[in-house]
Length: 287
Image (cartoon, rainbow, N blue to C red; front, side, top):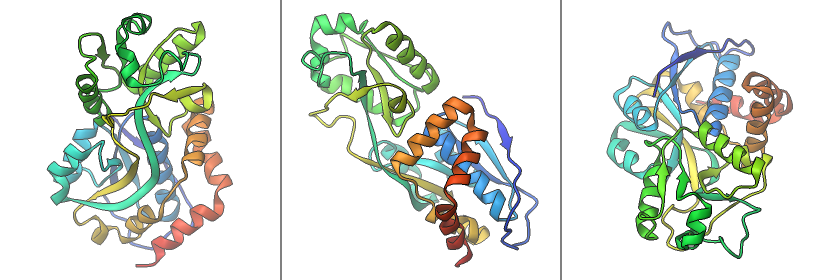
């Protein structure tokens, strides 16, 4: 995945710590929830501390490796305990978990609600040859390094679908475009997906049941920082530890970003969540 550095200027109630020359570098992935949460965190940090923030786009494994090595200061998209279990197990000794940014995340395979539930209600129903034909023998996936894709490969095996379906690799935006195209023509489609996601605000969708629990249980999404980050940036660490969003408000913010762009959506969130943000910032003042 390509790498890009972004910046976002801010002003406001500064924390009076001495500003450092080097910015805080936060890794992010081109997933809609990751982008919204990371841009929001950058806005709050820059508005309420003296620390500039740079965002570095990278695949999820590169983020874990980057935080573990110290090349990244933080990542805000650790899906635990199942989705990123492999990465967490590999790097956990060099990471610090500041706690969940949101809870109740769910992974799975998703179909439009117009696909008859009597025909396709479970992942196991995809084994029906006539269903496989209607689905084009394809499950539209996302980027290959995502934990969801690793679990989806396991699900193909668990449900005996490897001979009938191809798990297509793409990024999350291509997945959403494929879903939009299918919706426009009422075509059958199955995609790898998750909540929170703006697609649930736009279309009527449903998760297929997963009786084998191949795609994991409910997840919490945590802020992960490098060893020593809390010592170097105590106020920022405390803000990230206190930062918590409900799935409903996060999903609404993501949909706002799809309609009006991320800068506008972040502005709107900040303008309508004064008390919530103030509580996160207040936590940053208590060391």
